Length: 189
Image (cartoon, rainbow, N blue to C red; front, side, top):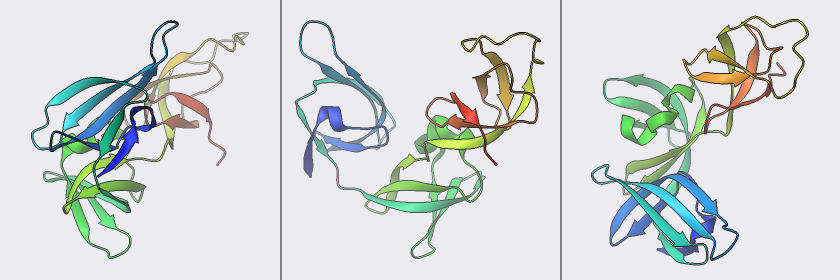
C-alpha cells in the first residue's frame, strides 16, 4: 500500500479504506475563503457497488491500493459486459458495465484505455480525455448570431447531448471531453 495526499487523487484511482477497495468516481478540491481546503471524494466500493462520499483535508493521507494499470484495446460489448484486449499478451478481459459506468457511450472500437487490475479483476477504467464524434442533430445556425458565449444543444453520434457553438452544423466532427461531454473544438481531420 502507498500513502498519498488526498488532493492528488483523481477519477479512476483505487483507494483502500478499512481493508475494502474503493474506485473514485468524482473528485473535487474545495478551497473556501476561510478554513481548511478539503477534497470531496465520491467513491464506489468495488466488492458490492455501494457508493460512498467522503471529505478529507487536502493534506490528509489516503492509502492507495496496489493496482496494475495496463493499456487495453476496446473490442466490443455484449451481454457479459465490455470486452478489452491486453496489448502486451493479447489476453481478453470482460469488464462489468457498472465499472465502465457513465463512460460507456464514449467507448469506440479499437480505443486504447487504461484498465486498473487488482488480483486479476478489472476494478477501474480510464478513457482518453478527449474523443472525436460527429454531430447528428442540432439547430441550424442563425444569421448574425456571433456571440461567443451562446451555445446551442446538439446530439452526438454516441447519443450524448452536448452544447456546441452556433457555427457547428449537422455532420461536423467535433472533439468533446469524456468526463462531461463538453465541447472542446472542431475536429482537425
